Structures are given as C-alpha cells and as structure tokens.
Length: 255
Ligand code: MN
Image (cartoon, rainbow, N blue to C red; front, side, top):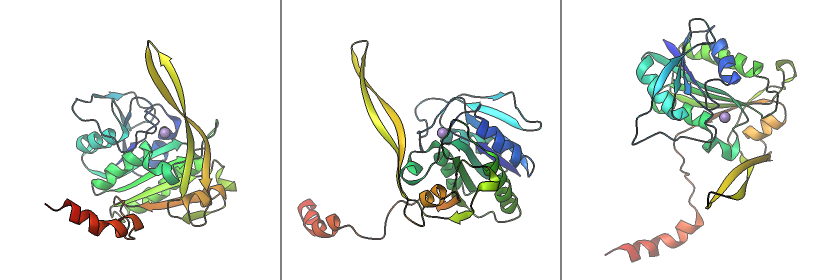
C-alpha cells in the first residue's frame, strides 16, 4: 500500500516535500507532481495530446518522484496507473489557502478530487499565503490523518484542510467546517503585445466572509479547518428563477 502525493505548486515546491517527508514516516510514498507551477488550474485534465512524465531526483530516501508535464489532476491519473496499490491521495501542502470560492479553482483540491473519484480517501492541504509559509503543522496533521486512514478507515472521502500560517504551538484548535463565501480577489490588467490585445489576471487580497461554521471563519480565528467535500455540486433547494419560469419554459420547448 502506498500514498500518492501531489500538488499544484510544482515538483520543486517546499510544501510538497514537507508533506512527503512526514507521510514517508507512515507508509511507502510515491510522488507525481506537475513539472511547473499549476496553481488555479482546478480540476482540469489534458485531452487531445500526450502528456510526458519522467522520474526525477528525489529529495527523500526511498521516495520515488515523477515530474508530469500536465495538470495536478493529470498527475494523479498517471500516478494511480503507474503506482498501482495506492491507498490514499494527499495533495499539497499548498502555499495559499483554498477556502470559499477558491475551492473550485484550486489545483490542489482538483488533484485530490481525482483520488476521490477513483474511490480513495483523498486529502488536500493548504496554508494561508505568506512570504514565509510554515508547513510544520500541516505536515504533522497529514501524518496523523494518514495513520488513521491506513489503519482501516479507508472509505472514499475528500477532505479539504486549510491552516493558518502559524507554528503548531499557537494554533487554536481544529474544526470541521463547511465551504464559506469569498476568496482571493482578482483584477484584470489589460495590455498589448506584438499587435495583439492581452490581459493578465492578478490575484489580490483575500475578500473572505467570516461566517461562523465555515472554513474561512475557522482559519481567520487561528484554527485548522477540515471541510468534507462531495463531488456533487447541486442543491436540493429550488431557486425562484426555475420555480417561476419552468412550467412556461417546458411548454415553449415542447414541439
Ligand atoms: Mn498552488
């Protein structure tokens, strides 16, 4: 049984190796990660072209590492194919929180989602952005979760873990949360190059709604947030737009 480790910050990111080092104390670890930064690629997979991958020099003894010239989700797909007896997928540790709206944009979560779709317990881990990110608490928590998963709690699940950028001894606790609202802000900067219009999406300050019970509330209050996610995005509640207009719409649609 192995743990497949991946991320979206790329194979050289320190958070990836901090995670792999801690998980290697628990189980055999194999690493499949994008060969470059792939933040914001969400659940994307590469279609209509081949994706290369190659073993690279590992920073850890007994841990094989492969760089994938594709997305985080691609990395998990090929990792599950090559490594075979994978018991769990861990993704991260991402530099920058993935809470609220950012859950759907995150390559860190997108990679873990592929593990979950594959029927495996899958965990995404992220720490609030800073110039100096502290991965210690996230790595330790990953090790504890992995121990419990490998001990037999191997149900398919998807956990999105976010941590404040704090040393372990100042963290205020751990909370099971739901996905909140808001996320990192973005702005469009227009430009022109070689006679063509272009634009660049610039990520700015987080605009987080700290509603109680959410991932955002826990983390801004110095706690670790563990959010169980599902692959189904629908809501059981109706929305007035459909309730009001559906009968007429169906009538107009019928031949
Ligand atoms: Mn990232």
